[in-house]
Length: 61
Ligand code: FES
Image 1 (tube, rainbow, N blue to C red):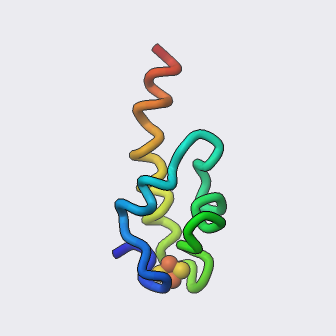
Image 2 (tube, rainbow, N blue to C red; image 1 turned 90 degrees about the vertical axis):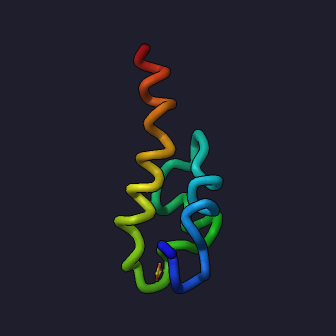
Image 3 (cartoon, rainbow, N blue to C red; image 1 turned 90 degrees about the horizontal axis):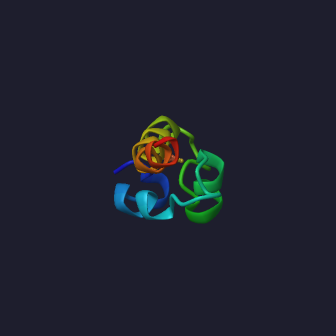
């Protein structure tokens, strides 16, 4: 589980990623993930990047 401190899972983080909410800080504001010990921030960033990728590709195409 990515954000063990608050019991936030990958699916919850992926669901929180949307336009205007694509930073680790924004996800932290929504879910508190990454706002305690910070050890999950790299994982949150990876989830954000994988969730954001199709959108980036679509806007480039
Ligand atoms: S595991 Fe994410 S803030 Fe601690």
